[in-house]
Image (cartoon, rainbow, N blue to C red; front, side, top):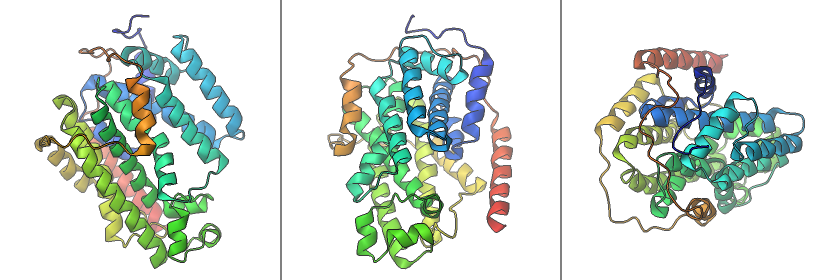
Length: 350
């Protein structure tokens, strides 16, 4: 199969991928509209498979069997013989056009496996290990889609993915606890006098939980700043979309600070007006380059960078849109987001 061209794919495949994204991560969906169309569609296709994999493992009756099936599907995708599923067909095109290392997708599935087995995270290093798999891997995969193979830039992409995952963890403390999960480091909760058992059985906010959540967001901010260095070295056409995603996720942390880091009784929601302000700033702002790009990756993320550099070579330049799909108009996007924000507020008040 030629690596510089996609096989013909019905536009419905990509439309289904985009629909899956629109019902998943609203921040990523929003930011994706600042990416060039080729990159936008590749990112949507990649996300759709990842989302489907997460749902199969998280919501199915047999997570172990689901993971085995997903690895079998990846085997076929990497053999250019994808199953007759729109997500697999699109991912096969992405894998072979952009030379996507299998190790990155394996890392993501390992993170899903950790969720399924109820892995416990005792320290912040444990949380970084988990974040590397479910989010750092995505940051590195996005870089691969941009043709990036420089390990210094990949390290910053992994930083950015990790920062976003720490933000997600901070935002979802209450929701996770009600599902029987804790992603905050247990040793830090213990130092604040917080009992994990009590948090799981009766999720109630207290100052100790707020302190641990604040500390997590401080680390996220540190990683966002490290990630900013890498954004400046991305191809210029990709910078606004990645910068927008960074700003939108960081804004969730800002919103959490405004509600006193209480994500048990409340949910941090960034308003549509605020999202569009961040969008505008992402377009007009140009990240200055710095010479300080030699910062090593987090140890927990290094295996992701190795997965790319060990494959050698670089992705081909894809200059035309192989998916032949129209992007959404910004006004349509605005109306969709405004309606979702309204529904989220109504649900919260019930």
